[in-house]
Length: 375
Ligand code: MRU
Image 1 (tube, rainbow, N blue to C red):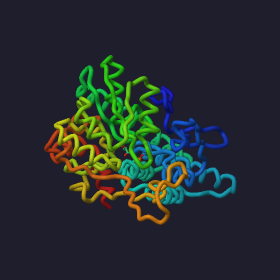
Image 2: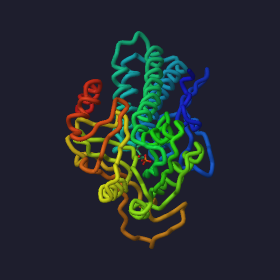
Image 3: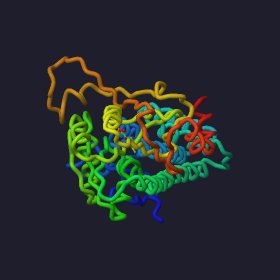
Image 4: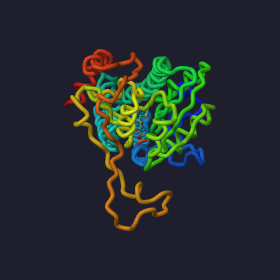
């Protein structure tokens, strides 16, 4: 199978390589839905910039991007050494890998998939290598493995999550947790795609997701491309439609899930969860185990990214608020676990009490990564 193939018709991030160079490629998500433009990045600083500016976004997608970014940086380092007739040691190459990994981890703090992917690359780099060329190949392969595993996890979450959807259901989602946020079919949207493909007639209410409009620009676009019926609403309409719109369930993704099941996701998710609770509507979180951070006892400890005031005060560069107004712009919020009906992972569906079941589902295989993250 083509290593770069994504199961949906939209490819989010992938690797290209020829004799002279390698490229981390991605759709520039800041330009969607108006234009579908592909970026071909050759330097790790460009990769960091793409993550920071949301050209690529979504927790699993930025993890995969960071992994490819490290592979890219190492390949370029090796090439520079050859061109300069210098002979870098494997240790020097590993130092470069660590520096780039640390730099990429600084880009966005909330989604744990990023540091998880960087740690995996570090672990792979820590094995014994006979040459820098061998290390370059190993890290490129590891990045591809992370991408392949993400696509497989999406497919599996789709299968598990679709069991929660009945024919004729109207659902609601917030932000974008679809193909654009992963390298597969998505997290929260994967069950919807699976149900739709199985012939279930579903209808999706899509919150626009202020301030960056991931719902309006990205989720509405990709659902439309896939032929899934949808209605776009503003965030403030969610309560109204839960009351009168016959919404049967809410599906959202996650950027980090603490050991007790508290969920950090796009700002506004918490309000949606409280509304769902008030209307006795199931609130499902769909996320791979790479999003579960068992080192954090509760959501209180999840770092929340603060983004620029301009995301609030301007739309497409046009001011919509008085000059100099005080602004707050947390990019994520934390939904307490008591509002979460179930967490769908690629290893099964977790229901309360989360602190027990999340350890069982996501603990064993990730033990080493959790330890590394703690250090
Ligand atoms: O700021 P973003 O667009 O990266 O935020 C994305 C989200 O909050 C998603 O819901 C989350 O990453 C899950 S994506 C599968």
